[in-house]
Length: 143
Image (cartoon, rainbow, N blue to C red; front, side):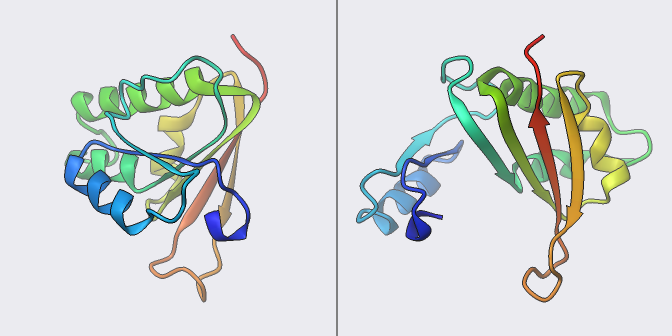
């Protein structure tokens, strides 16, 4: 993204090691920031982002989901906190791009909120292996 013109990018991870490694690897990308943070408890101000992208974070939280038809309540609560934080920090008319290789009918329930609409799109399997699904959420109104 940075190389095609999107320079003001904030990256977070709960692992200090990951953040330090990425800071080093991207030291020439001066407008990019790297912050150690828990995605369930973001330090950002309300309505401060135009776009939020998740590729793998919520999937990782769902690894201990158990039965996908009846997920563990702890998993549901963890993922709910993530999505609630996204709702809080997104500007009205902002977008949340959730890239997953999970089945849409299992992932959709975690994203449902009255303030936005969800679109799903399969990403080109020739470009993305394994096959990823893009769930694009368009924020329409603040509750």
